[in-house]
Image 1 (cartoon, helix red, strand yellow):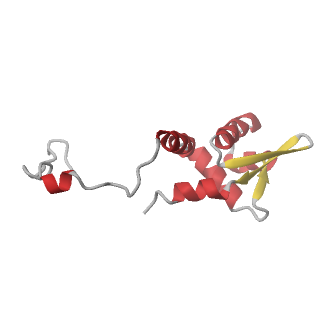
Image 2 (tube, rainbow, N blue to C red):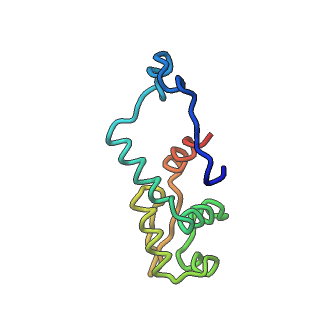
Length: 119
């Protein structure tokens, strides 16, 4: 659409009563569910975090050490750890300390819930 074009809506498109009361979802989210989902969506609304989720879910063992994630991303360990912490806090990853390193794994149910939002 050109900058000078305007979006036009048919005059009665939004005012028909039968369209106005159609439920959007079978059962609306509770406030708590919406807040939880919003936190997860905020966490994945970053290209680096999406890459991390992809790398971890695609790993042979289903987990990855932070030490193996820095080079492919071209980021420092503290930066990668920061992004991983956000994903852990959102409930999308689990973290397990092994010696001086942390290992991360996907939480399948949480990731499936986000996938369920996509058509």
